[in-house]
Image 1 (cartoon, rainbow, N blue to C red):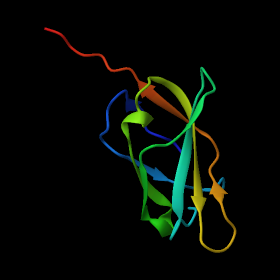
Image 2 (cartoon, one colour; image 1 turned 90 degrees about the vertical axis):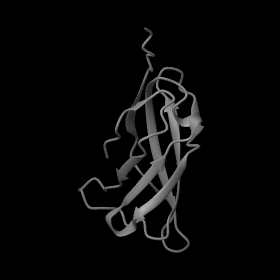
Image 3 (tube, rainbow, N blue to C red; image 1 turned 90 degrees about the horizontal axis):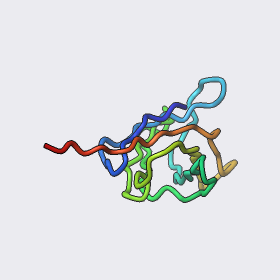
Image 4 (tube, one colour; image 1 turned 180 degrees about the horizontal axis):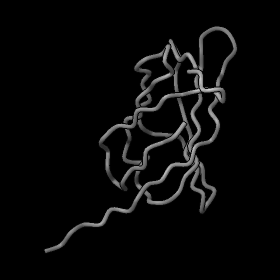
Length: 110
């Protein structure tokens, strides 16, 4: 699962994520409640994802991460891990850790 880089302070575009198992098959996220963590690789500080995680195509393992300001408030390299909780069956499910980059914002001055 590859994550698209973001820019510090940028709340758009949302990130579309496909949760796949190690063999490449999609994890069925139908009726799952998603959460996640962001760990700063430089400081090892971990925080909860503050944005909204919405399943968009459960059978295909697809969901959307709408960033909150706290998700993209610091530039750097991060480890992200998602969890899915289900009402029945084996729960929770967790992804492998994925590296995520938040680039610094550089304002252009005239």
